Length: 146
Length: 186
Image (tube, rainbow over all chains, first blue to last red):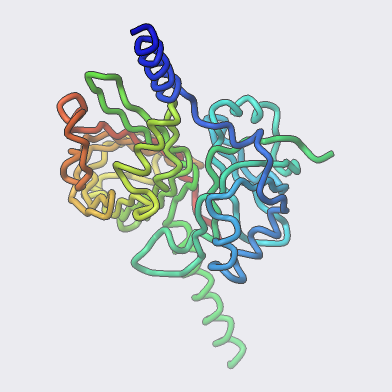
């Protein structure tokens, strides 16, 4: 009887912990790949299928130049060599890492690579002509390059 | 004479290009929040990397939100949302394509706050449904802040909720959109 009660308590505790568990922190994990923003944008530009297989849904650490900072929770990173941009949704736990950051600073960012949008001119699709974009989620600024 | 013609054609191309660019305002870091109240607990999530474009000349407006970028507080809730409810691997983006129906009433050259009526097609989970909403445009000299709020029915988008919790989960979801659109110059 006591064993069953303990077993049920254990199950209930496990379920509770699983349910209330926060999203995993992707910024502090060991990245699957370490690259530069230019490398990432160039690889997608050259061959979307190969780059997607390599990077999509993987944890990527990359360095690049800060083009825009939205302190509510997103940044835009680019590379002077390429036209494209990397948009990063910042994990709320890392929002404080945006404080004090300025445009053109070289930052080291980590997050999950989500998708790539090609730059295509299309009269019917307003979104298609905005330039090549890689979207990251659950990201954060890990460091700045001095 | 030939040189004059060349200058004229080049000038026309440049003017057309600049005009086209200045008609469009955009963001790649717009925000969509959704909220659903339930008997169990409230479900809410935020997406901070929404792409949006507004063509002020025609009033055409488009949004795209990557589904996996909706951040929930609880990991398991986010996992269920992506895997069981909206099937984010199969349907990676939700999109809106529509227009401001009273675009002629909005004086884009005059800073101020304007009411806009937006109508269009919202696609979630591979299902497209017409929606209409009231939006606010706050126009300044350098950008346009656009925001709207509307409700969608979960069942309209073929999102099935397990029968065990169906009675406890709200059948409608409140969606709030906020964007700061900047002139598209290219």
